[in-house]
Length: 403
Image (cartoon, rainbow, N blue to C red; front, side):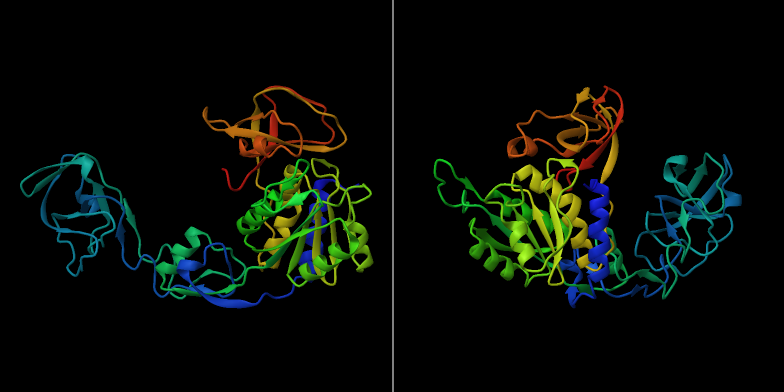
């Protein structure tokens, strides 16, 4: 049985090998958040396009702004002003943050380090050349490539595109992810369940996780525990870029997902992973499409999606697979877990004392969505650890939507 790291690597290897180029579309910079760029973006000029002040203060010749020196202020420059005249010797110019520095000035002295009477400015500290000035072209040269294909567009990348006038961007289209739940016990979320039925919460959580990962969810409903119905719905799901099923992957009489997929020619890469929750997770390639069978208990579904489906969506988007968002934290309460499987425990990590500290939450097993709603992470207990003492450093898998 594979470790979760080995299983994740299998997904990355297989999907990365077969993903092929993505279809692209031109998208407004306003609508491109989370998309993967399919073009180069270059600067339209130098950045900054002028020597820029980073502080409110006085532009000076640094050699003239010695402690106790006085210079005559001969004007002011605010952000956006056109600056043509050079700074004359023996003078200074009041300047605002973001404004262009006049030629000849080689430093900006913060206003807090000066005093002023009328036009005379007295300096309290020595100025150094380059102080509080960002030189022209120091951030980027003209015609420099600043964004490259395969980059996922976050708010910083979009701001950079906007800054250089790239208001329309060629982006890879989001991969379409079929979502299919299974089980006779499952009813629609807007229905009243029978005494021994449950609402289809997995489709909702999976759709949300797909969106967070950068995909387009295609909810296919629920398949009954019958080979014909399950097969028909899987065929529909294989029209999408990838298919994610929840439920039906354990060893029970009515767990039919693997047998139906096998009959359809699926090449299985793994059908169990050494984790809890989520051990029965399945991954294979069917008709050239990645297919995931995730356990039906909601917490198992959420954990295995993050471990195995999220990197596949990255690759299908035209990007590299992102690393798991693992951080180290100090354990707030001692733990004891059965060894042999890596445990992913609903937990809460906080930064109140400056050092991340994490505490596992009480939960009733992999069906306990309520416990996970109080968690912002999963505390990862390695398969070879039985006891972890208070104060030890542990790995924490962050919930992307909660931290």
